[in-house]
Image 1 (tube, one colour):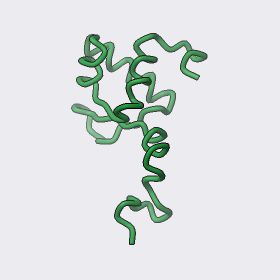
Image 2 (cartoon, one colour):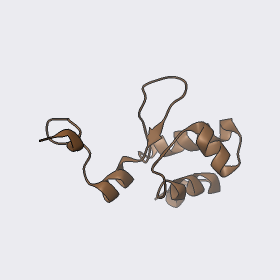
Image 3 (cartoon, helix red, strand yellow):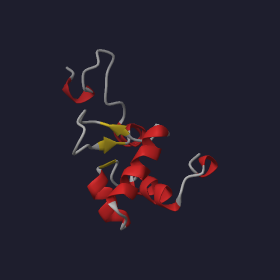
Image 4 (tube, one colour):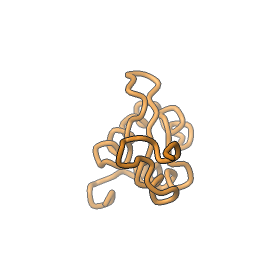
Length: 90
């Protein structure tokens, strides 16, 4: 999917890293890939557009992103039918 959509090597490397840690920030990604902050933000933007990452904070700065499909593949659904976290249902 990523390669079919013209993803750069940095995007592919970032996506591969999400399998070991399915969450990231621009700062974490920049450090992990050894790229600049603008490049990391560009990679994140591409992955958000591809619906691989979701922004989780709702902030304009200090944003944090998760890969929900990877979380679900490992831990199962995180939201039940009542939109409550599955870990907190009785």
